[in-house]
Image 1: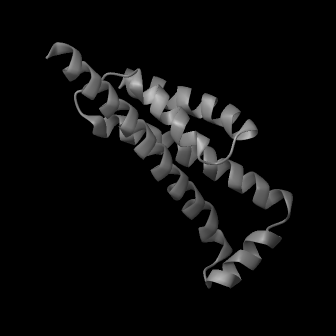
Image 2: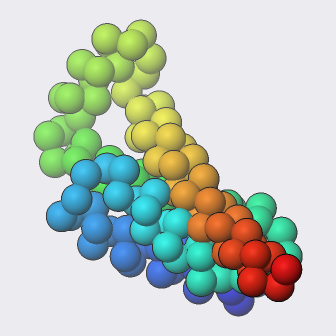
Length: 120
């Protein structure tokens, strides 16, 4: 559990810095690099850490942007897709979370692949 929290925190901090300078997909690269350095028996724990970190990061940032423009943009996008504006922030967070989770899992699986190559 300690590794999970540490990995989540590192992805959250490095991801927020990377998102400021690089495009949206850089969060997957950050999660993959961080996931590479954490050794898990099961890569699902790394996926969950990436999912939690990026979901929190993107949901908070989307909520901040939504409050900055008084919800006008979210209301218009909600009308475009025929959903309520209250659903857009969790949907944004979940999509980002999937991106981060898959990135972290990729890093962990790459580590396992390289460990098996060096042993053989």
